Amino acid sequence: MENYNDNSKIQNILIFRFIDKINSLIEKPINNFKNSPNKKTFKILDIGSSHGKNSVLFLDSILTNAQIKNKDAIEIYHCDQEINNFTELFFEVNKNENSYKNKWDIFSFAIGNSFLNQLMPSGSCDFIFSFNTFHWCNSKDGMFECKDGMLNIKDSSRRPGTVEYNKKRLSSIFTNRCEELKDNGVFVCNFLYYDPENEITSIGEQTFKNVKSVIRQMANENILSHEEVDNMVLPVTYYKQDEIDHAVELVESKGMKLLDTQIIHQAWNKDEVSKETFIGSIMAFSSYSIKSAIKGDSEKVNSTYKEIYKRLTKEYKEKPELFVFSLTFIHLIFRK
Ligand SMILES: C[S@@+](CC[C@H](N)C(=O)[O-])C[C@H]1O[C@@H](n2cnc3c(N)ncnc32)[C@H](O)[C@@H]1O
Image (cartoon, rainbow, N blue to C red; front, side, top):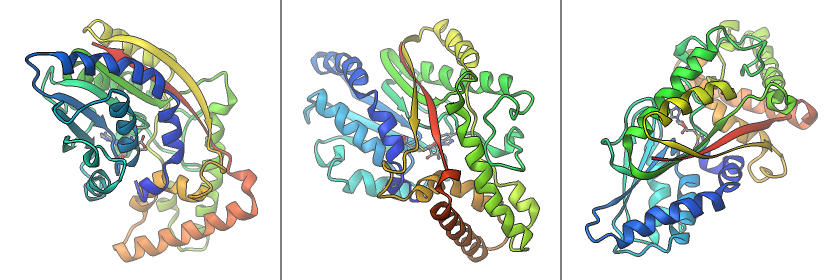
C-alpha cells in the first residue's frame, strides 16, 4: 500500500459504520478482564494494519469507550505481510496524537506474517480485528488473470475454481483466528462481498477496465510492453454468501460462534475523499500491483508509475463518469 495513511478515508468510514455494535460487544470482555483477580495481559491482534492510521483511530474509540486505565495491562499486536512498511506503522503508532501510545501505558508489537497462518499462540487473544483485508490474495495463486481490466468481480469474469479457492482461504483464515482466541474472545472482520443480485457490487469491474485502457495506451506507445500491462491485476477476491457459510459452519463446529453479520454498500464517493483526490485513493491500494508488473530498475519503475498516475489524473479530470466505484462489504462478529 502506498501513502495509505493519507488515502484511506473510505476504509475508515467502513470500519466506523460498525463501531457501536463492536463497542457494546467488546466492553464485556474488557470489564471481565479488569475485574479478574488473576489477570495477566489483555491481548489485541490487528490483522492487516497497513501503516496504522485506521487501526490507531479504531483502537482509540474502543479503548476510550471501555474506559481503560494504565494499570490494565494491554498488549497490541499489529500484523501485516512481510512487505508492509512497518516503519510507517511505528511512526503512526508513536506519533499520532490519538494513538493509544500517547494516552495510556500500552505495549505494542508487530508481526510480519500472512493471515493464512496462525499468528499468535493458541488461546492467547482476547480480541482480534481485521478490516478491509481478507479479500487480498497472492497474485501468484493463478486466480487473477485479467487482460482487459484489473479486477474480476462478476460471475462471468470469475476464474474457474474460485468457489473452492474462496472456501479454502476463508476456512483457513477463520480456523486460525479460532485457534488464537481465548474462550469468550471476540473476533470482528469485514471483507469484500459479491451479491450477484445487486449491480452496485460489480460496478468497479468496469472502472478498472477504464483504468486499464489508459495504461494500455502506454503499451500502444511502446512505453510499456503489452505483457506488463496484462500483468497489472489486483489480486482481490469477492466472497459469495455460500462460500462464507461454508467457512462459518466449519469454525462453528470448532467453537467460534457467529453473533452478527451485516452487508453494506459504500460508494467510493469523491466528496468523501476530496482531500485525498480520487485517483490517489484508488492508487493507494493499486500501486503495488501496478509497480510489480513494470520491468526494470527502481528508477524506471518509479518514472513509469508517475506517468501512469499523471495520465489517470488527467483522464479522471476530463471524464469523471468513467471512474465510478462502489464497495459491497460483509461484516462479521464472532465470539469463541
Ligand atoms: C486495505 S489495507 C487495510 C488497512 C487497515 N486495516 C484499514 O482498514 O484501513 C489491507 C492490508 O492487508 C494487508 N494484507 C494483504 N494480504 C495479507 C496477508 N496475506 N496477510 C496479512 N496482511 C495482508 C496488506 O498488506 C494491506 O496492508
